Length: 112
Image 1 (tube, rainbow, N blue to C red):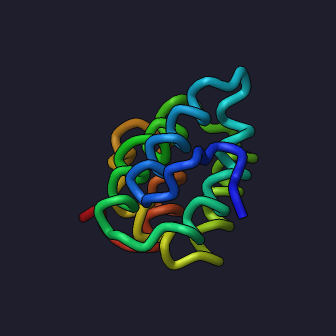
Image 2: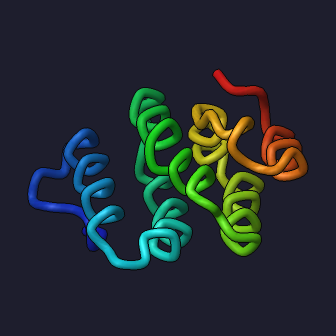
């Protein structure tokens, strides 16, 4: 099965880079990312790749004015998906979001 952001090279690094390009090339990247992150996390196994997504797109999603709906979806993904929790712990957002949001999302663990 190929996701819409994948290309013919199905290696994990290629999937991560293709996903990141797809995410940032869309007009409404926050909406796409909420749906796509959960799917992406299910296909990723290497901690380095999860760290890349956490410190990149997940962090950007949270720090660039994530709405309550986005925060709810991020929290829901972390509840349901162990890989997403690992990626979330690689995001450094505490200083750039409301303290209540940081507390809510850090319940899944301190940053690595």
